Length: 356
Image (cartoon, rainbow, N blue to C red):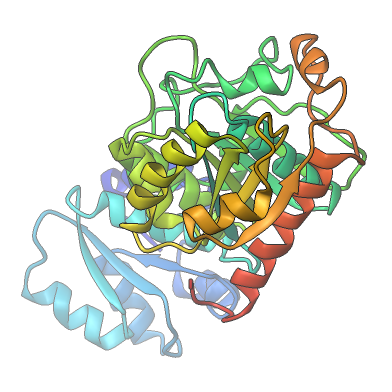
């Protein structure tokens, strides 16, 4: 209940940014109809005073907003109505957008974040990340595939989605705060993959060398987690600030290492960098093994638990060149993707509500 027209305009603008629709009450009698059910109640000082005099019951998530610094009467009205927060605008705009986003979407259970990294260039991490995203869609999950490697050529190419409309990095103008997951998906390419009940949104880098900022990655990943989605991040081997932001948010990191000596040496260096960030790290070994190295030998050399030893998949390279997404429901790649998803589920369900 807000009577200050300038403040009302500000609140409407912030609600639109949060993807939240406001219901306006003109007096306490109207407010009473929304009072118990509304996830958040916004009041100005006059509205707080009127609601307190009308005897509206105390409730949580009541916010009293003012333009500029609140004066003493504002605090008295806040106490009288039982407001949890008194905020000064414009300083608290980011906080209010976050609160309204939370009110609009809530926090759904089941959100999980995976980071996939290659042990060397061409290890197949991007293809595995795409395959895991497709597997999650097949399981009925709403899924977000996030490209954090600006020099990787664009993850949309792996899915044959380069001609689909939608935003790419760095064109997604997100710099911190909370992003509504629904609005994010609406702005992204959404290739049709598999036959599952889920939905896939792809946030790829474009063909320039400018990737996402760390704050943008944090906001996007948190939007997916908050909405209960499976978020799969394809990371570069080198620890850019954006890659570290994604890795720090991950419930599980997976390192993809081809089965050859040089890849093992390179993978050991990458594994050492990844373990510095304290996230659980698992291994996927990709064949062929030209020198006959066994996948178990690779796992022992890197001292990492192995999730899958992936045989070469006939026709995969040709299919990717034709722009076909790695969406076969069977085969070595699909089997490895399901193994990764199973481990991710185990990691996130071991302690509900907490990251490992």
